[in-house]
Length: 128
Image 1 (tube, helix red, strand yellow):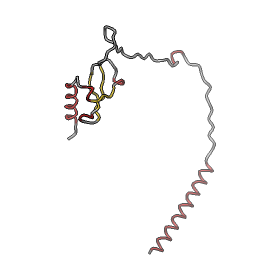
Image 2: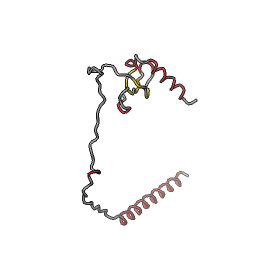
Image 3: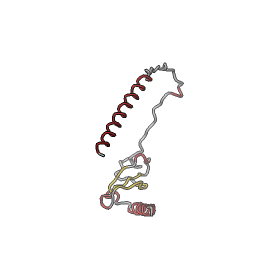
Image 4: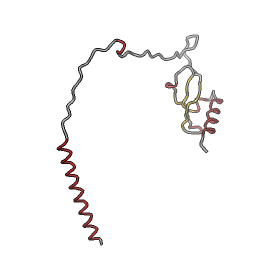
């Protein structure tokens, strides 16, 4: 039984090698060179020219003109970790969402109501 099995395996391997060689030969004979032609650059209309976007950071100074040391939290977007090692993705008031920062729980001591609301939303959103 073992000798017959070895013979069948050897025959199968030889057929596989033969098929691979035939497929390579077929692919090589039907392959052709690809030539790319570049299109000449056309002048663009002024309305289509790329323009630099005006980007301006929100002011980090208060009404008196002195720099602000404390920023107000608008809401908490996400949480990583738990307990004392929790980090929160914080959206700051007056700043867009793409400028949200990750802050440890110790930095958010002044907004316990937001932390409680975040935990409550997390509990309510968990699937059963």
